[in-house]
Image: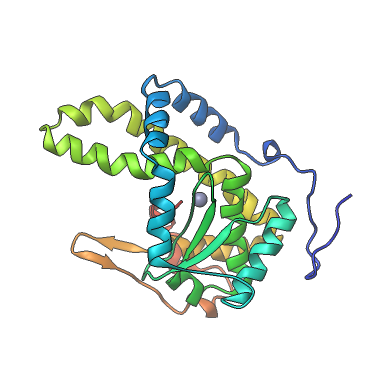
Length: 247
Ligand SMILES: [Zn+2]
């Protein structure tokens, strides 16, 4: 039976990820899994300790949240996990001037929140973001996401090093990954809404997440005073389409 969290949100102890995974996510994943090269890449990723690489790199760059360190964020993590009924992953904050969050690690799964997001988002919006990331865990997205995050820059480098030949070889794989990774985001936006349980919070958090303007000269970030947001955020609407490739 569903119960309530301390803040009054409903928990979903028997909810399967099938209930909120988008049809386009399922279809894109099926297409990705049909690419012949994929099983080999998964095996090589595991042999090369890709999982360990992400964990160690993150531990060196981030600060872990717990009952005595970023306790509010830790409380939000516990609430999100109790709502979607998954074991608690580790939670970290990493310094960055851009809004983003991501999840990695199969053996020791961890969620990372970038510091700009922690500074500028309300607690409810951060709960939505954490809910989105917890959704990735519940949907079983983490392996392919970690693989894609490592693979895509490598294929880009390979393409440049081989005057495009390597890029050509990897094109179907890259396209498959990009398609699935985008569709997976939609599923997890639904997970975020299930956790925060307030459409307005989901809306404002998603719009803020969209407002990052990377430019070729570096990372330029436009961050108006979003915490004063009280209605439709018109300046952000036209930018929503270029939401960065967040994880
Ligand atoms: Zn995501």
